[in-house]
Length: 559
Image (cartoon, rainbow, N blue to C red; front, side, top):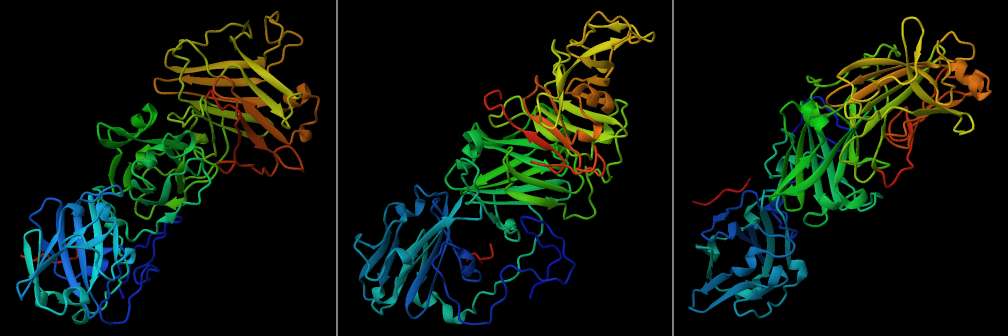
């Protein structure tokens, strides 16, 4: 039995110690070789394969037992709609001078004799064609009863090669194929899929996502790359899979961050499109795609991932459930891009890195397939403050708009206990500027004071009676994205809402210029944000209520 060092499982990638056996196909006891007509050429290993002088055919082979003569043909090209083999034929010349042949019906719908007559004993179960694991190949197997040949000696001729009947491999001389454990030796993006044999491909035909056009999916996180395998139900179907039929997928990290991946075909080549922000993150690295026989293999550099600690998931963009979950890096020597730290609270300082390993949720300006990740947001409460964070890829502060103002906060999911905030600036003497510059900002960080959007603008100074400063907000304008964080006094919110602080079990924030989702932070039944229990929807720790819909070869080749 072959032993493995690495064993891959589609859902939870595991690294096994050397000497641990793999659960996939096990060794069989030695016996006479049998050929199963299923389009899988693995049983032909060790049986002579013959070259072809016809560009339609890559190679072919023949074997026999007492009951049948078996044929294997590998085609160059082919698909479910048509196969090159149908324009080729076998010639049979008997020792007594007679002749016959083997011909094929359209798209291999039948196997016929040399004059397109029926062959007694040959039906649908005696032929099979399947996409190859090799790029742009198609595999065909069929069998002909021995009685068709009448017990006479003959010579087969096909694609320039002749084989005498007495030279055809007798399966009794071949041991039963030994099904060895598959050994994972890495993935190469070349359109040949045999290196995926050690990876358990998940059946996703039952996925409930609208417009699911996939049958299989698998993911391997190995070192500095994430490798994705997809099998579609028909040619090109993956390009129209998922919500809005846009071929939009995502890598979702364990901190709730998403990298959207849009599968497209341009100028005859399959590609994955990402937004400018991810392109900037990858710093010249690229996403590679190969497609053949309804299958895709994709490599995504880890640099395309947003903040993660250990795990990522893959699936349709913003779907309720990923296709493949809890994928970890099988290369234990690699920690490329991982945060490798634990959340230790928030400091309001405009630095933002303390938000990295804290769960975030997505806010979308448009929900129609999500080619851009509009914003990610989070809320946190501690020491009498509510903290908020948003990273926005809309980056409108440099373009004549401000995507952050106004924003609203509400308690207990109740619009009657809510407040919308206006940003004002306050100088060192406490003087209030009710109309500070908020748009066309130069790159940099700016701080503002948060006031009720309904406040009287007659207040001149923060010391004026009745003026309420609810907290502060820092906004960083950048060329690729804008980012902000704020802190709000919990006691002032409670007073505004007419509640005790311990009555505010759930706080939510909404950034209306980005999207209508409410980002939620939940407290506990014993008090406000003590021993916090985080509610979750798409990522542990964050709830996001979506409302906007429209804004949004082992063979030996004979010489």
